[in-house]
Length: 258
Image 1 (cartoon, helix red, strand yellow):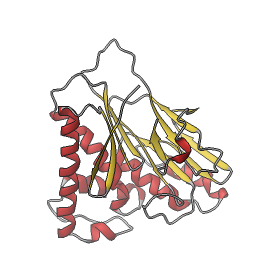
Image 2 (cartoon, rainbow, N blue to C red):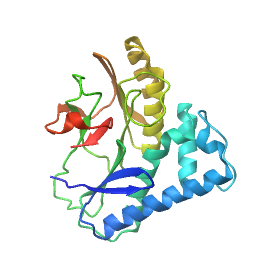
Image 3 (cartoon, rainbow, N blue to C red):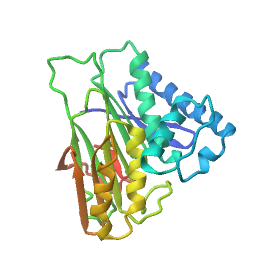
Image 4 (cartoon, rainbow, N blue to C red):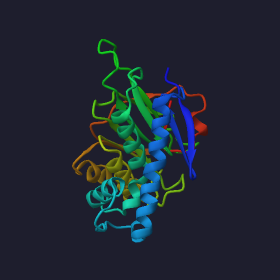
């Protein structure tokens, strides 16, 4: 069973594996801080990056996190900040994996407020069967779907699972969707697309059209949307199972690591 350690920085809370507090964990946390600092420095130069609800053109010299967020915004029609949590998680994992000489870990996983990025490490034992990552789905305490989970076999280039909700969390949603969960190879894109899905769903009949809209975006693998007693899935999702996390109904994020 994987172990996770919590790290907090400037109001954001992260769950990280490996959790041993060793060099790789330290690298991940340092990258989280530097990425966040890069974004805050850029926002001082271009404040509209923080407030816009639609795609924008970036000033010259924008840092990598801002570029990834702006690209995801263009694909989804959202503002660039819709991709912030996923982008930080993904870049922290990628930068730590590229810089670290540690080969013992099986993979690196970060959960950033319910947005998850998983990257298998090349140094893991080649003859060892890849263990799935279980991401629980939470669409409300009274929801019949909150015992569901995705059984993820991460792609070697990385797998993102990001969620948005009009009922939970601090992120702005223009819809009334209980939960929109998106799977992609890019956490920036998955995060922005989850926001779009949440914006599109205001009633149960919106679920199907919203799901089809999301999977039409290049780079989106699969989606799951929930509204009241209805659920819609589209694209290629990981296997949907029941999770056994006894604390699952006390979660406050749309997606969580089991």
